[in-house]
Each structure stands twice: as C-alpha cells, then as structure tokens.
Amino acid sequence: MMGLQALRGCAVLAGCWVLAIALREWVPLPIPVPLWGMALLFALFLILGRVPADIRLVGEFLLHHMPLFFVPAILGVLAYQDLLRLDGVALSVALVVSTLIGLIVTAGLFRFLDPRPSADPRASDPRASDPRESDQ
Amino acid sequence: MSPVSFSLDPSALVWTGVIFVTYLAALRLRQIFPRSVWASPIITTSAVVALVALIAAAPLDTLDAGGSVWMALLVPATMAMAIPLYDHRHLLKQHARAIMPALIMGSVSAVASALGVALLLGAAQPSLLALAPKSVTTPIAVGIGLETNAPIGLVACLVIVTGLIGIILGPVLFRRLKWHNDDAAQGLAYGLAAHAIGTAEAWQKSSRMGSFAALALGVNGLLTGLILPTLLAWLFP
Image (cartoon, rainbow over all chains, first blue to last red):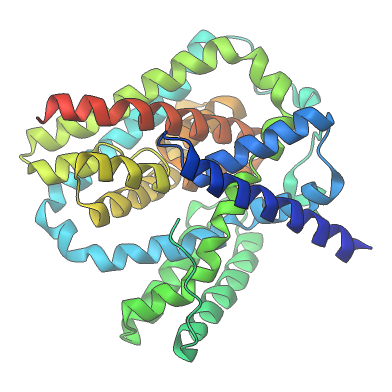
C-alpha cells in the first residue's frame, strides 16, 4: 500500500517535471525548470485545497534528503581550482562579506518590520512538528 | 540542472555508491552531533567524498558522471518545496508586508556588497560578472551568467561556495545576534543569501524555517533573474 502510494506520488512529480520542462521551452522568461515545477505543484495544491498524501510522502522524502543531491554540485567546485586562483583573495573576501551582509539585512529588516514575535507561535504551523518526526 | 548522463562506465557507478554510502554515514554522524554545523550532512559528505576522490586521483568526469544520478533528483526536490510553501501559506501571507522589503533589500545589499568588495580588492571584470548572480540558486545563476557572458564554471562555483559560507557562518551569526529562535527571519535569510543549499539546511531545522527559505529562494531567484542581466548590461557595457 505504502509502495503504491509512493509510486503514485512519483508519477505526479514526474508529470509536473515534464510539464515544467515544456513551460521552460515555451515561455520566454529566465525561469528555470525547478521553479516552474514548484509553481505547478503549488497551483495543483490550491486547486485541490490540500496536499495529497501520496505527493507529500514522496515530496517530503526528497526534501529531507536534499543534502545528498547537492553533493555532486559541490564536488564540481574541484574542477575550478585554477579559476578560483585567478582572483582568489578578492573573490573569497567578497563572498564572505556579502553573504554575511545578505543574511543580516534580510533577517534584520524582517524582524524590524515584523515586530510580532514570530518565533513562538508553533501553533500556527499546521503540522507543528519537526519534519524528522513526521516522515517516519 | 545538468541533464542526467547515465554512464555505463562501472567506475562512475562506484562514485554513485561512494557518495550514497558516505551520505548514510553522514546521517549517522548528524544523529550523534545534532547541533554542530560541521556535522551537517551536506558538508561532511562533500568533504569526505572530495578527499577520497583526491586521494584516489579520480578523473573529475567520472566523479561527475557518478554524481549525476543524485544531482538529477535536485529538480523534483526543489519542486517539492511547494509542499511546505502550501502548508505555511497563511503564515506567509500574514507576514507578506515584512517579507517583501526584507527580500528586496537583502538581495540588493548582497549583490552590491559582493561587487563593491571585489572592486576594491581589484578583481577583474570576468570575476565581477561571475560574482553578481552568486546569491541565486545555481540554474538561475547560470542562466544570468549566460545572459551577461560571465565565465559559467566560475558562476556555478561561486554560487556553491556562497551556499556553504551561508550555512557555516549563519548559525554562528544568528546565535551571536540572538535571533536563533526566530525561524521566520532565519529561513528568509538562508533562502536569500545561501539559496537552495541554505534552504536544504533550513528544512533540516524545521518545516517552518524551510518554507520561509523556499519562499525567499523563489522570490529572489525570480527578481534577480529578471533584473540583474539588464542592470549588469548597463554597469558593464
């Protein structure tokens, strides 16, 4: 039963993926396939008024293991050791400084504009639990 | 994302396996050290596999081919971010007034400070062009790089390194600022400044933080993708 559910979830995701590739081809905007797919799924949930259990099963599994899918991209950095050497110091400093500034400005401005304590109301979290527990 | 190239080369499949087994071990390590950034599976798995590849002097093509199976799953995983976004739609709507200015200013300040610092330190124009899209997720950044004729390899590399810097420095930063209990603010910051790597990390912490991160990732990607190519064409004619 669980297997069948997972298969159905995979089928829906694969369908959205194909449709997203088609939209990427047809629409002349620089919107990449994953974002199209995210938008399609979101629209599907809005139409249905819920997240179907089979899609949630597969989707949350994928989200949970995203670090694994990033490893090959990170390993790709090995190929650019020479390029990094070119402007290495300038680039490294720029990356560290700008990433810190991006983090501080985004979180700080949000906290400034949104003084309501957004940390406590776990109650407004519909699933109100850590994903690690929910997908067991 | 790069297309999946299913290589029949058995040595590529060995790397598919090495990455997987290392990841399983990394998950175990995470259970032992639930709080340390250095036990984050994304960092430990990459570091161990990179080390093994360097010691074994593996050809990078083979390593790439072996990893491509896992990399392809990034697309459906990114799509699946629609689930936390949908779950938290009321929460996101409720905070929309604060979210949008925070994302726009965060994005502008990250790009401007990156270019400013690199200019001050005398970086060459190709490096500057490659630096500009570094805060958006890889597929969008590469798209922008193609528009602005930046060196694509360097673009992808800087995006990835940015994500790693974000998840390594972020927890320290937020703890020091005492913002570490604010899931919403941290999620937005990770999704904006450290794109999908930050979002993957935020999702590991809580589904609430993950959905704010996914929102920031999507909005930042779209806005930057639409605005930056025009801006760069004007700055570097």
